[in-house]
Length: 118
Image (tube, rainbow, N blue to C red; front, side, top):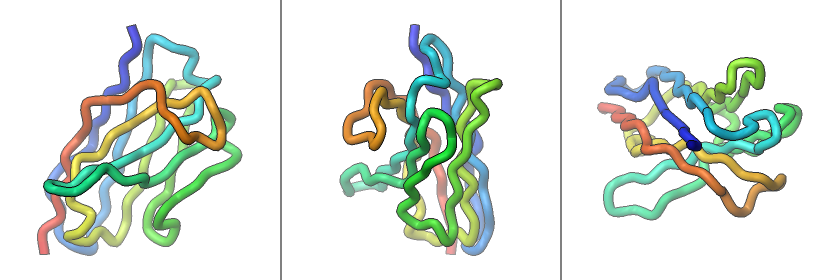
């Protein structure tokens, strides 16, 4: 079955960095665009970044601090987050989409908590 498993979340001080990972299985990873979303308490889920199936095109909401990448040989996707701010605190979700640009996502992970302390 399809699985998306996020890891790498945790507690970090403002200004610090984290690298989130998403391990994919159960589908042809290299044929899917992938995305990261986040949801903070009391807020709606919001787009963070997405990457085309071949990794050659990306959209990043905050490209000055976040970088999305993927390794199709390993069925992995990553989100490098630098200069973290308290407002980045949220549950971060990995997702997969058949389409690019990706307006709808077919699969979702369970999320990983990121907490940024001030």
